[in-house]
Length: 242
Ligand code: AP5
View (cartoon, rainbow, N blue to C red):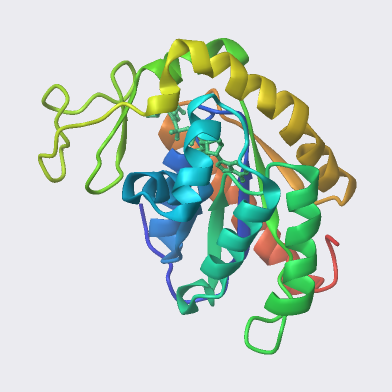
């Protein structure tokens, strides 16, 4: 994919149910624009693996497929967004996922992020619109590399050698919450707590829905198109889209 690492892209937010392809596409967008992927799931899993205070609080909640309390996640995101590599923009993958988190993020942007150095650049929110019948196979077939984070799927995106990362040779792992008995809980949490986030951004006119049933390359192309169209529109009408 062609890279474009010179200009500001601002905040990009990927919303969608578990297995809809947020992580897969966030990595591609991050690479294309040279901006960081901020996955709250990855940061939490890293804290669990390192046994930090946050990790200990999040571990059992994640294992049963519930959401980690808003205050813990918002503090974690604030710390990450204050880092210098977020200056030109970033991709939020898995955040916000409650109405409270969405409200918190808008306030954070307004009071802390939209200052002189970042400029006022409203987020583009991409909804990964996917057929629920596809999700179970995507989630149970997922494998990821513990070293580089690359995501595979035994059905749709297998590694060249079974269970081995193409890029660095690490043995691929299955996530603890990708067990069949937890998937239902995660989907229920999405329906109850994250659907309101979709409605929140729809009301604000910031939501762009992308057909995430399509192959990875095609979904990626549509997301890039949405970002480019939005950026072009904002260049012409800087105050639009609020
Ligand atoms: P998190 O890690 O965010 O998981 P999730 O939202 O459940 O999403 P997934 O990572 O399962 O799926 P994805 O959409 O990224 O899909 P992927 O690209 O991997 O959260 C985990 C937990 O952390 C939560 O349950 C919660 O406890 C906690 N948490 C995290 N954020 C939180 C927050 N903000 N507040 C509170 N708690 C929070 O793709 C899936 C599979 O499909 C892969 O195998 C991939 O290869 C394949 N695939 C992807 N796209 C395609 C395609 N187009 N065609 C075919 N296959 C595809």
